[in-house]
Figure 1: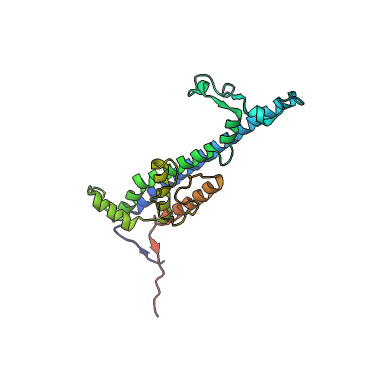
Figure 2: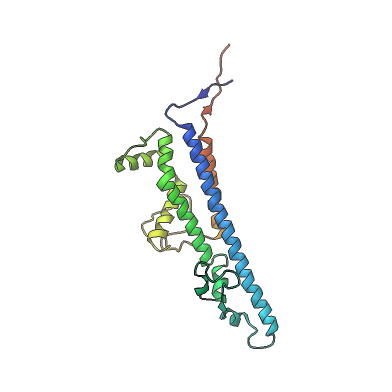
Length: 233
């Protein structure tokens, strides 16, 4: 059997824990996105169905038009009780509800931004430092921020996370528009400075898959490498 190449500085158990934690976060946000999009779709289809039924009743009159139906009020009354999360005081037109729940609409954009910011926060506020500690490159009790930043930069720089961080900062600090401070993206080429960060389902599919590949890279690091020992006769 080939001997194992074990680096005594690396905490392999901690790397396994980190890989599992990231997997859990990935699954959680993927489920959030899919569940929410399912809700957006069902709500939009429900409004469209109501409009179709109303138009069939008013067929042949001036009220038989999508434009008119879109001006009518929308209510959550048949979906939620009056006391649920201020649902009874929500005000919107049916056209607004259809628009915000359509792919590329405001709800899709907001949901994509929430997921991206959550991933970025998990990386910057937790995973990045813990990864470097597990690799034996940083004392877990290090308090000097300059030392921490330098070590993170040297041992936990990643093009994907860097691009996600740029988008996160633009969402949080620049009202969802790519900041003029962003010079370039390494991997994510969807936006340029000044663009609104509209994350469509296709964008999110690409992002989830890219983060899944990162998870696989992290997962591989939890076990020491194997190498083949060749002996001469």
